[in-house]
Length: 337
Ligand SMILES: C=CC1=C(C)c2cc3[nH]c(cc4nc(cc5[nH]c(cc1n2)c(C)c5CCC(=O)O)C(CCC(=O)O)=C4C)c(C)c3C=C
Ligand SMILES: [Fe+2]
Ligand SMILES: [Fe+2]
Image (cartoon, rainbow, N blue to C red):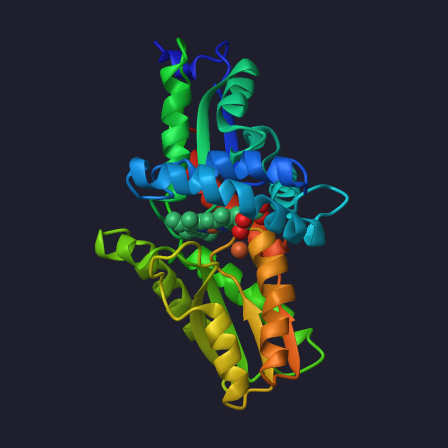
């Protein structure tokens, strides 16, 4: 007697893959940015300050001042396809679908904003996906990013009578596939520059330093990605000095150091003239890379005396990045196929 799964008349269950990134406003205007920031900064995992203290600060100060400033920043990087983070995540989903063919149905979601995780899980289920792999596209795990995706997933499941079976993609900060993709794509971009950088600065998004002491592995995982990437690049670029920093400080608390803006200024003041910056903690370019690094970072470096500056692209839909994503996803699907 064949087992039911082996019976030719019973079709294999459909598998869905949901790529998830942080989220972004729907438009580069103050009202849209305010809506997005309200959802994002109300998450207890993102801002770990007692509500009684945080609520008046968020609603009384931040949501009245930051949206206009951030909307201006977003307008500088907005593309025909919308916010870079959403446009690139969508393009990654399409590219992954082409690579996976009939093996899985690929879709994408934003943790804050649209398309929401819950809506996309429902859509995959409605299309017959009984098994769904959810892939938070953060190489390094943190409570403020990866864990919030799983929280949203839990909330969606809590509202479903007939739930799909789920898997989640583990962090891949030190996975040889990730390090090799970063090495290959960084080397390709460095070789295409019209100058030879003295320094390659690896800039990761920051977090309050307190989260490290509370046990969040994010800082250590960023450091390990940086160490492995530097070691992988060394044979091809023996004269390149590789440094690490943390960007995007938010609020008054002490954040992880050294801070990217301070390092850019210090490098130039100490005589570095040619510098390239890369952001191996972001799987897709976004406001933090295109505005904070490529525009403001360049200004900071040049004002302090630097002469040549380049902000490298994230893995985005590069061949190296998509080959890595396909391999990471296929490894998870192997348990189901
Ligand atoms: C890559 C990992 C990220 C971590 C860790 C992270 C922590 C973190 N972020 C904030 C506050 C803000 N982040 C903002 C934008 C933003 N953050 C990430 C990623 C991480 N954040 C991305 C990919 C983006 C870009 C979104 C886009 O639309 O392109 C913003 C919004 C922009 C702004 O107003 O500056 C805020 C605010 C905190 C407090 C935090 C850690 C606890
Ligand atoms: Fe952030
Ligand atoms: Fe920022």
